[in-house]
Amino acid sequence: MPALILTGIVMQHLAYALAVAYPERSALQRVLFERTGRRLDDIVSVNVGNTDMRQQLLIAASDGGWATEVFQLLQDSENLSVRQYVRLARDALDVVSNAVVDREDPFLVHRVAGRPFLDRTELRKQLTELLARDEKRVLVVTGERPCGKTYAWPFLDTLGRTHGFDPVLIDVASLPATERMPVDVVSNVARQLGLPRLPEVDPLAQGASQAQRLFTWLIGEARLARQSGAASRWLLVIDSLDKFPLPAETEELFVLMGKGAAENRIADLRVVLLGYEHQLPVDLSSWVLTDTFSDIDERALRDYFDFLLRTARGGGIGPMSADTAIEDAVRQVEEALAGADRVDRFSRLAAEVDRVGRALQDARTR
Image (tube, rainbow, N blue to C red):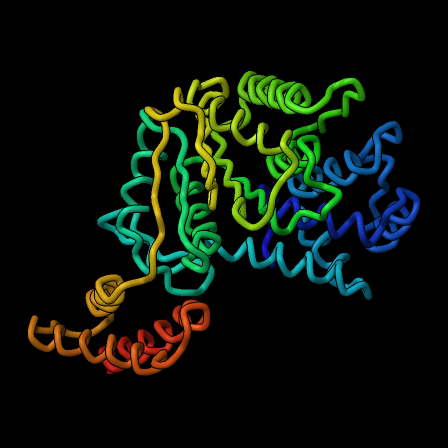
């Protein structure tokens, strides 16, 4: 693996892996020296807590060009949970490198995370407005499960980076039950962004006041980052909001994030809420984009197979033969999924489209 720059969700997964593998500083200090020859005390002050210690270590590894050594150190762990976090980090790294973006339309991404991303026309239009302009700064995506809201994350991650944003994913469903309070969420955001410190808990702050205090802290960190010349165009993606209830103060935090983006309290902040079923404050309506995901239809399949034909190596292909090839590809997918219920169909759709699409390209290049 070449030298890596650790950002966003990759940083979060590795921080969790370090916490599980080496809960105490002494253990991490010993292994780090044995495996890399580096002294933890030379990298991170002994006065910081364990959470900040891991964050600062990962930042130092990323900046110093030895993040691959951290990957290897954790990959060799005998703890299955640690290796799972490492695999998630590697998968996140693969998202952008495996994306295939249409040259004529930078918001049309055909493949993400090694799988087809079937065109979501309305989502493309909304993201063009969200990322390339400054009139709308919040996007709310809804839709009956399963419809691909969560799978939209690799798409959002790819386009966010392409357009100069640092994407951050807070997947509510993956948070431990003990880490769903506002301070946990903001700390999670800070770790993914590589901020030099984490927020502290105010024991006197309760409910909405805690959420407000933490969002104010985030505003301050964004201003410090901008003053220091660090990148501070943030794309916050909050996923799985429709899976289960959250603490009221955490719900309030997400509303504050949307309101803060709309009011430009954090310059160049964009917020995407996936599965947010509640009504946002009325005064945000002029700043909010909405999209409702539905099932992948035949038109989306046709568009994807048309792209494969247009970009396959080989000679020209007439419109009649292209139409016939696309019709046949759509038929093959529908036959493979015949009889599947809605959940099974959606879970298998990408793999079947990929299988048929590869055969279509192979036939075209022979």
